[in-house]
Amino acid sequence: MAGSWIQRIEKALVLRQHEQAYRYRKQVSCGNNRILIYQGKRYLNFSSNDYLGLARHPEVIAAWQEAAVEEGIGSGGSGHVIGYSLRHQRLESRLAYWLGFPRALLFCSGYVANQAVVSALTAAGDHILADRLSHSSLIQAAIQSPAELRRFRHNDVSALQRLLQRFCVGNRLVITEGVFSMDGDQAPLPAMIQCTHTVDGWLMVDDAHGFGVLGAEGRGCCWDKDSRPDVLIVTFGKAVGVSGAAVLCQVPVAEYLLQFATHLIYSTALPPATVAAIDAALTVICSGRGEVLRQRLRYYIDSFRYGAQALGYALAPSETAIQPLLIGDNFSALILANKLRERGLWLTAIRPPTVPSGTARLRITLTAAHKYGDIQQLLEALANVKHT
Ligand SMILES: *Cc1c(COP(=O)(O)O)cnc(C)c1O
Image (cartoon, rainbow, N blue to C red; front, top):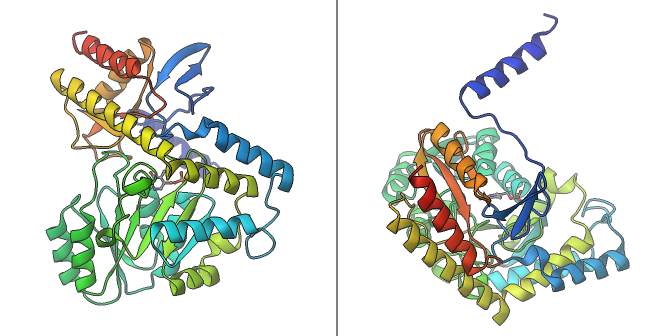
């Protein structure tokens, strides 16, 4: 059997290449900036999730620097040992109060938070009902959990309702995103909560792309009472411009996670300076300055949609910073991304398995760090490549 490991690996790699789905990383500089640099050339960046431009906000940087000088760099251990400081505790309280939940727990990333919640909460005999287009971190967690996973058609409340009726033994955990990361559309949260609660199920919402940009003061998709789920995940690597995540939940759920979520117990806590930077970014987000950034972003979104529609592109029903252009096959999506890159625009072609097969797309993200002229430049390039 010598060589069987490498044979298996190489076979998978060849298959990937054959499917035009091979993933390459590109080494870029200033990827969190309006202009990024690749191989010495400048590109307008339409691929960043830093929707409000906070990754380079002076107050966020200053908060990080001050805390780093005061507290050092690494947190030094798990939150269960010595890694849980006053800064961590205050940020948790702030998030819980601001978002209207009894408790908040910090995690090092959204991916890990999703894994932790799904694996800690579910048991054999339970059912997880997940929107078909949920983020990979949710679907992977559900596949690995002892519960049985069923997926329902994207944003289809009656399909969810049917599944809830059909699988009535065990506890039911319904999973969705607030804003869908590859489509930019939003889940019908009040209706989903209602039908889930009617049968005593729980709803878990991952609001990675709504937090900071939608809702009053940027509280996200779940800011009003009618759309408050049982478990809410917010992440800090997108509109907050930093990294990390929090789980918002009831007191016993938080206590349960602290006892049983091994992802939390056996992992080094967020660095205190990261916590300080998140805190400073939240201060901008919930202030009038945050509102100005959100208004500017909305204006860019409207301008882009109006322009791209006029050019005859297939837009997704998205009101958010995520504006995918649906292309279809992998090859055409890659060609289009390359043509735009030749014109100095940085966009990513998103292909299966990240999105359903046959729905390869260009994922365009707009941010408040863009200038109005950038949106015009993007539209002009889209007009040009359409006729080449
Ligand atoms: C980005 C993302 C995550 C992962 O969050 P990280 O903090 O980057 O690990 C989880 N869920 C959704 C919907 C995301 O878009």
